[in-house]
Length: 438
Image (cartoon, rainbow, N blue to C red; front, side, top):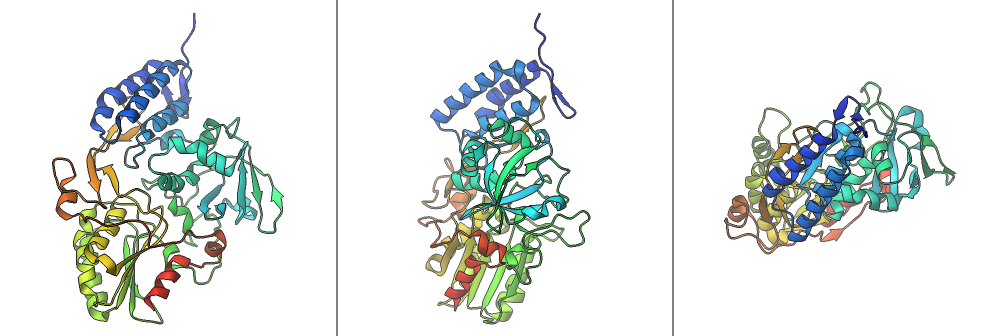
């Protein structure tokens, strides 16, 4: 008689019947609450759930988790997603980022420091671009969002096995081109977690790799920006908001806002009010640079008043340069949109297209699947920050009440940073804003 497989993922054990019960919960309890699926996408989701259920006797917990992740991602909506971090296990000893000219290693375990700055040409059996294409179906959101998320998943052995890049979860070959032009194919094994890795602490996998860890961090991993004397202010320690007058011009205020929330007990609204008092009113800048390139969201009620006030506090011939990237997401996008709606032609977007379209589904809540404990977020409020929303019966009320109408969220000046610029500590996006300010 056939004995059903008992699945294991570390200390996680799941019986096939438990997997099927989780899938039933996902289909019957969670899916009806999520409004982001089109009719066609919902049909595809239902078919995928049936396929996973049919294969439940043979699935490992990690395969099940990734299948759930892929099913949820069929909505194509960045806020509709599944968190399967508990099932992924240890990552490989490198961290990477997609630049305009390819996928490059920006941080490594100390034993692999010789790979810093290497371009990753091949991951296991797949060219890097093909690996990106293969992992995208598991990632939620538009193409820019998936490009933002992908590097954090392409260094995970279980993901690489799932997408066909590797046959096992150990000794995975990476073909890399080193800075001297030579090519190597080291075989990488999973290692203990990067001590500075923010990806496992509730923050999205992605942008934390761009910022070097503090020098005194125990067991610190070396970074490509180590030793760069004066890198961009974007790559200093991540926080919530900071502001200072740019030198030598002294007519331009730089504001970096990494999250639409406070990281301590002082509300973000108070911190922004202090910037108005201590920097804008005190120094009377002609121009302001608002750097939202690492802003992955939060609660946009924290920035509504500031976004509406900022354009009114500048001279008639002043400008606001809003710096954006694929990491700009959710309330980060809303903050950019609110500034644009209030400032009109005074506002110039510089950088990459942001991590979502101007119209998306958000808000909602998380639900936890009963047995696997996978947290799955649903989205139930429609928001439009380009055409605008006028009817609270169809749109999130705050978008109707405060949202802009008739704007574009596309960069006015599009810049996709090359690895050479980043590795040298240059910031062409900020440089362009300063050029326009002059």
